Image (tube, rainbow, N blue to C red):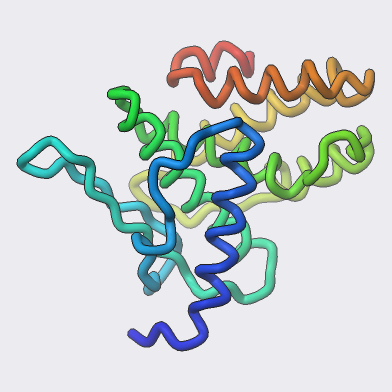
Length: 192
């Protein structure tokens, strides 16, 4: 499979990584670009533990076609990479559902841009596009994706009401940071 023209996608992946790390005040564990390969289908993060205990990863990303779905796949894949790398660096495990919930929220964070310029109407429009008008390809993990989508939808609706509407952006950032640092059960509780 050719990587010709893939440099733009690698640049985009690197920019998404920087955006996520800056937003959550994370130290970079590893640059995403050397771990990226071209996906035959949708994005996928392959993770395994090596014999020496190190975490090995490969991030398969599709060619970005200039549409929202393609961009969201890059955001989701990079979110997975950053989350697993960060958790592994702190000797913390993660579940597949936890990974998907975080990636759903990270799509909103990256696409929302500067939070201080965000208003309820823009946030609601973004939220609807990302979480309300979706379809799923049936497969073995479909229910996990549905749960992650519903969790992010509830969480972000609550943040719109309690923080965006009131223009409480410091509190919004604190909530999003706490969500990132939470495990699966706490993420589900925060969204309830």
